[in-house]
Length: 284
Image 1 (tube, helix red, strand yellow):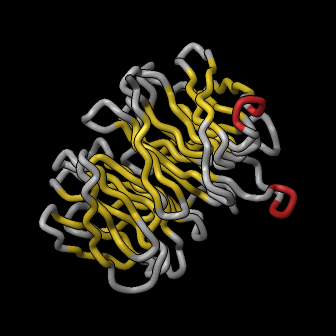
Image 2 (cartoon, helix red, strand yellow):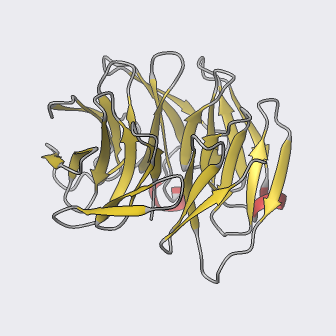
């Protein structure tokens, strides 16, 4: 299980290698097989009462209705490797292409437009709608191999891209979310949580001592703080919008890696485990 989102039906929807899944607040799971190859990576609720997803193996972006009907749309660029996807402020869906180094836009009727990212080999991972009416995206690669400068990117709904360099060569970013303070917050697997204002000012907070240096998925909690996951599986982290850090140790099976999460209507945080589990963390 890789990514999850809150669906228009009030349930949590998630991606697996070859299935889409839905879990109710009482833990009942339904799975919907997706044709073609895997994996399914990104997922988001659309503006059309459907859930939208990316299929990396089939090189498609697809949607599923609340009654389980699935439609997929092939990308114009071959082997693009679509990853994160989000609902845009313009009523379209926006996604990133890891291998093609592009940001994509798809309308709800399936029309796709792609926008090349200026910095090569950015290895784009995630994208989110900011409170400023733009889309913000991040990526992570091996700079010692590619020589890539890590950036946080912003794209307008008209396709204009601006990139803001991170301070460290090792500061690739894995996930990004719009914070309750109007800024964008992102995780750096090298051991930091980053904050970028909508004018491009970046602040980074070192959290390696709390989470074994591997912050991964990040989400806004019902308390308006930012919650993040340690991909090494040792802790859940929390950072307030003024930078105060705390942690919640967790016990996990051996060789387990945690992924992404979402705040659910029951007031809890739900998060994924890459070894086929979904967990619920109570805020009470």
